[in-house]
Length: 280
Length: 288
Image (cartoon, rainbow over all chains, first blue to last red; front, side, top):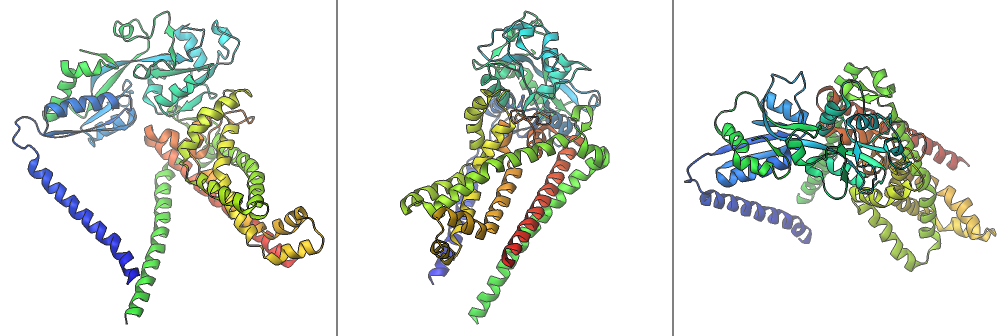
C-alpha cells in the first residue's frame, strides 16, 4: 500500500499540474485583446549575435506598438543569418558583416546600422594610438613586442575571436586584408564578452571589440590618430566600421516590410543609436 | 495473479529503460557520423587527422594540434590528480579519525556537484593571472590541467576509497601481525589489493578529463598551436567544437562533427586500452 502511494503521488501531481496548465491556457485565450486594430502575425529573425541585442530592443518596441504581433529573435551568427534568410527558414536574417561574394544575390540586404570595431587594450596600457598597418602587423604576429609601437618592453598578447564570428570576419576584411592572417598564437575567445574579460585581465593584451561592448574595463586605441567614438565612425574618419544588416529572401512585403520600415524609421533608429551608429 | 503481473511489468519496465539508454547512445553515434562523414570525404581523412593548420576561412581543416592538445591536457591533469587523489583516499579510508572523515567525505563529494562553468570562472579569475606570473599570458595547458585536476579528483578519491575499504579486514590484521608498520601495510598490502578499483577510478577520471569542455575553453586560450611548454596555450578536441559550432556552416560545421567522431573513437580507444591493462593487472594479481 505504501509503495503504491509513492507511485501514485507523482502521478497525481503531474495530473494536477497538467490540468492547471490547460486552465491557464484557456484563461489567457479568452482575455487576450483580439479587438485591437492594426497588424497581427509572427516574424522570425535569426543570425548575428552582434545584432541580436538591438534586434531584441526593436522587437520589444514593435510589439509594444502592435500587441498582436509576435517577433521572435534568435542568435546563430552572421553566416547562419544569411543562410536562413536565403533558405526562407526565417523571415529576416541578420549579419554583422558585408555579404561575401558567394552570398551576394541570395538575399536582399537592408542596412540597419553601422558598427565600429574598436582595438582595445588594458586600461593601464601606455600605447594609445596605432596605425591601421601596425594593427595588422600585431594581429599577424609580425610585431610581437609593445616596445615596437612605442610602449614598454613587454610581449603583446593577441586576443581574437574564433573562426566564423562576424566580428572576426569584419575585422579580417577591413584590417587584415587579403593576405594577412591572424597569428596562430592568438588566444581565441568565443564571444565579445569573453574577449573583453580577457583583455581587461591582462596588462599586455590587445583585442578587438564591437563598439557596443566598450566600457571602462578596457581602453580603445585611436587608429591613425582618430579616437574610437560613435561620432568619428559616423562622420567617416574612424576607419574600421562595418554594416549591421537585416536580410530578406526577396523585397519584403506585408508584416515584414512594416517591421523593417519601423526599424529604419525614426523610432527604430532612436533605439539603434543607443549602442550603434544610425543610418537614417 | 497480481504478483506475477507485477513481476512481468517490472521486467518490461527495466527492459525498456535499458533499451532506451542504448538507443540514445546509438542515435547520437549515428547522428554524429552522418553529419561528420561529408567532412572526411571533402577534406580527406589523412589531411584532417594529420593536418596542423586549422583555418576554416581558407578551407584548411587539420586537427592534429587539437589531438595533441587533448592528450597533453588529459595526461597533465592525471599526473596532478592521481597522487593527490590516492593520497586523499588513503587518508579517508585508513588514517583519518571518524570525525574528520565525516566532514571530508561530503566535502569531496560536493566537488562533483559544482557546475563546470564555475570551475572555469574561478580558473579564469584566479588561476590564469597566477600562471601569468610564471610567464606567457596565463591561458595555458597548466591552468587547464589544474582546473581539470580539481574536477577529476572527486571521482578518483571516492572510488579509490571504496575499493580500499573493500579490502578484507583479515589482510590488515595479517600484515600487522607479521610486524609490518602501518605504512608498510598500506603501501604493500592494501594498495596492491585495491589495484583494480583504483585503476577503474583513474579510467573514469580520464574519461571526464577528455570530455570536459566548458571549464577548459575558459582557461586554455583555444589557440591552434602545438603546446610546446606547460605555459603554452592549446586547443582540445572538445574545445574546438564548443568554440566554433555557433557560427559554423557547410564544410566547417561538418568538420566540427568530424571532430566529434575523432573524439568518440579517441575515448573508445582509451577506455578499451585501460580495460585491457587493468584486466591483465587484475588477473596477474589473482595468479600470484
